[in-house]
Image 1 (cartoon, rainbow, N blue to C red):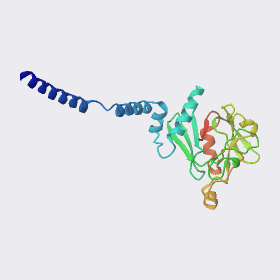
Image 2: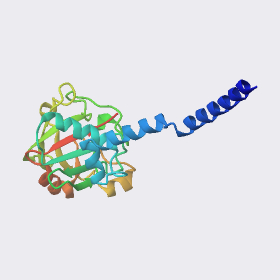
Image 3: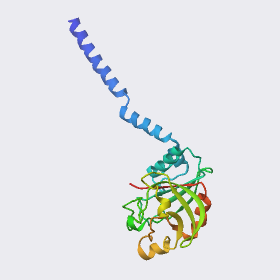
Image 4: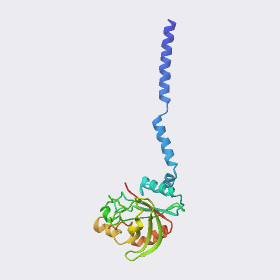
Length: 222
């Protein structure tokens, strides 16, 4: 009889041990999620995004794409402007980050090209006379005075096939009266350019001060 009793005790002990292991075993899925979150939070882009408190101001994926594309150039830029062209033109979808001070220098409106859409930019092109916005990374050049638009900034498209025709297309940053709250109130959207990232005329001085001669602009779109 002892062997049977021993077997029952062993079986019971085995069940209790198995239950103990099941209860104390780590949640591998949760652990993987924590590890992934830690790795993501440790990236320079995520660290700066959180430091600048950009949640609700600029989408994380747009900021990360811009920051990592700039990092590929190997240049220590003084400022990076990011426009999330997935957002409607009625939102202040342009954010300028001072990379030296690690602060947000400006948040404002920016127009897209007439060929790209109305309220939303839905089409993008690098083609001359398309009047569409070109996505990607631009180096911001010298201050100029446009005969048509007044104070402006030259742009050099750095992504072949995506925006490298910017100079030929005369794509520049310039101020425009159709980029304003008043225009939105009248029409329900911003006015549109011929492909230039136009900004409010009364903020062109601030934009130029932050970006001229060495800043970068990244236009993000799905």
